[in-house]
Length: 281
Length: 298
Image (cartoon, rainbow over all chains, first blue to last red; front, side, top):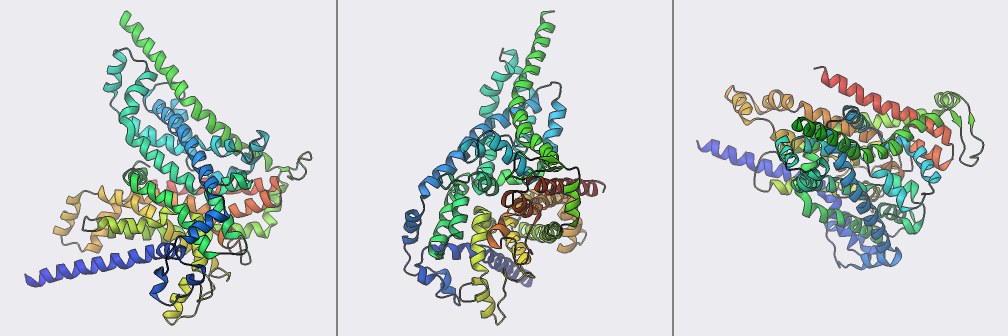
């Protein structure tokens, strides 16, 4: 009996040890990044042979101040937040009503649209960058906000998420509303939307993260320095001589802060959104 | 009579509402997804230089002919496939292993989950910049080489040697991406009925047998989905080589999307780049169809 107990305890210790070691391997690059961002330039590569390299001596926020001095980061953050929020407002509205129509309304072409949405989900954006660029230049949108916003509003994946959620809303509820004289469109805004906060939160956080991380399209279309998004700023900061690692590390940390804040506040929806995509998909 | 009238009125309302609600999204998808797909194929049969926009001539399949003899194209194709074929099993297996480690409820489980997920909280650009520094071949500045030297090993020229550059990108990408797939696997694992494990354990199945005969069969749908999204993601590789190696050394990290970018946007060969893009598109769609077919036959 006792040996079984010790065996169990041993198993538990091994389990925690394994998780801890792997966990440390996963976070150590990020810890090093944060630590380096707090060190003066001369100290970043000073103690590479010891564990001390992960500990910021003489920690200060000087590097962060330096980044703000060298790059107009406020402008960069403003650009990024503006374009993402603009996308999201339209994204949540347009994709949700489309998903709702596909889930709850009977009309000719419904099945066709649905299969079209599902088929286009695997469509790689990278294959259509060239004609997209030409389209943008014909519209006169190159290097302007609409080029970042308008093509990114409709998303097959978001439509499908909304479709899956709305599908499960009981028809009785909608019928009751319609007997009370509510039109289908009004029913959606006054009854369906308020009870669907979870799916809106999920799509919001998934798309926010996706756009915050977006690199290739903004990189191709936003050529002006004053229009740069955060990822472009980070990338060009890294590519500019002379390379100041202290400032670079600070910029990396700064660009991650909004994501971390989002994660802390919306973790539940974010994780559930990722998870549910697998179950439904 | 009045009731049927009301019914048909409602049906009409619903039909109209259906069109009104789906129109904005469908119109945008057509304008910014379907039309560009068609134009990719269309431009691919033209000689179209960005510098000479008034001199667009139809040349049939000449771009595709050129493609077949273009060694840079074949290298980019090979590199893209190599990256995908290696990163998909590595990243998916890692993700599943991590999910198994944190699938049961125990004290501190959410801390470990967050640790494994944490690389996802930074963007690929950030990760690529950070790892370029970590991969530095000088052990006095590169953290990973410092570790290797401490362990008594030789330092490696991770990103400057053509034999290791792509593998270095693969390792980093799997580290960054596994947390995402882990979350999908976790949801899948939690959906497996407990009594199946209990029944297996009553029958004397070892944990390893339980994994093979209970976990894996129950997880099939999830595994299929995870492989699919990882594969599509992998085929689109661009940011990492752009930031870390600019396609080098000696073209060893030049991918298809990178080639589309250099041909179309750097050299201005729009027509030619569109033929590369069309091939890329066909490959991605074909691969997802094949994968779907293979996995649905069982």
